[in-house]
Image 1 (tube, one colour):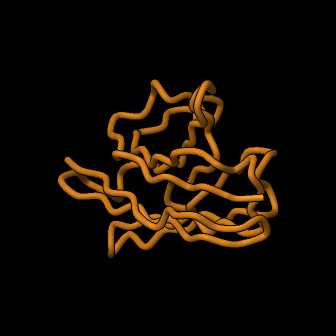
Image 2: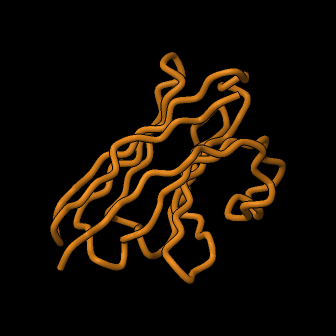
Length: 125
C-alpha cells in the first residue's frame, strides 16, 4: 500500500499550487481521501476530504473558498488545488486514505489507515 504526494514547493503570497496524491496497493474506490497539514509545533489539521460514491467534499474553514479537492479514480489520484495562498498555509501536507463510517470523524487523523510521506508547502510573505 502506498500513497505518494507531489506538487509542493515555495510560492509567494497570493500564489497557487496543486498537490497530487496517487494511491496504489488498495481498492482506491472504496476509500475516502483526506488532506491534512502540519506546521511546526502544531497538531495535524484536517484540511479537505473527498469520499463516497457522490464524492462528498469537506473543507476546513481556514481554506474554504480557496482550496478545491477533486479526484480521478481511474488514475487513483486526488488533487488539492490551492489558490490565494498565505504564509499561514505553510506546512507539510499529507494525504490519507480511510474507510469513513461517519462524517463527524473525517478530520480525525486516527481514523485514516494509510498515509503518504508528505510534501512541503512554503508560502513566503
